[in-house]
Length: 289
Image (cartoon, rainbow, N blue to C red; front, side, top):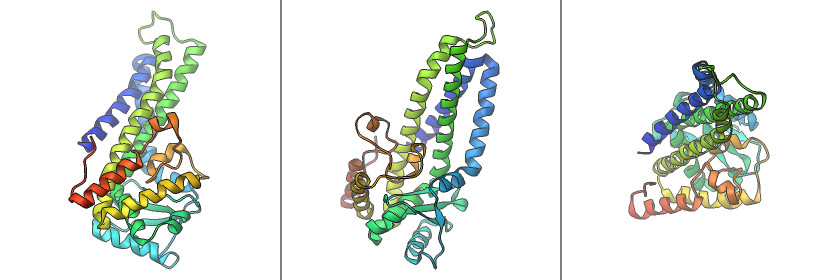
């Protein structure tokens, strides 16, 4: 069901960007929006992993440079039946981790220096199992495309704003956009894109938690890790990067309180922990609604 929801939401984002294009410039605007979305999608497919790794100054490491980390990743990938991903360390004290790459054959897992200090071996196995779950489900590609389309919608909404301010075509032009519709697109589109991306990321986190518990061999490993990471997030904020990449991390490093919780790209950590503990007790995870 979560996979079906994801594809429905991705289709909704594509439809939204086409609708904005039509509002701005009629059929011609819709075609330009389609081309724009296609270019953005292709760019995210080929280069999203390199961009995000560079954004966080991630450094590749070999087995000789980080033997314990490398061994854990190698053991887990063997259990999961995956190719060995590239391993990176991020020079950040905020404990966190993410996976990226367009497919399992071109995957990478990155952990911060802080997470290596905070978690024990079992907890780190739970976190890395979660990230390899994203790789196995090809979530890294889906999330990158979702983020890219959301960004494209925001750009189109900005174009709508300037179009409404500077004036558009005359109302008797059948091919022209409606200035009122453009104003609506300017206000609603970024909000809708944010909600859609949030829903995609939340469903994917539940699936990756399930996979992480299975790959690491014990749901409690990941539950304990999440509890520690949530506590440390409040103590040590992430210094580099952008909130646009928050959905890639196992714990949202940019989440705040109040209204920010409504737009969090992750489910509540307490809910994730409760599901994992229920899995350990009953042998079966509680599926998200």
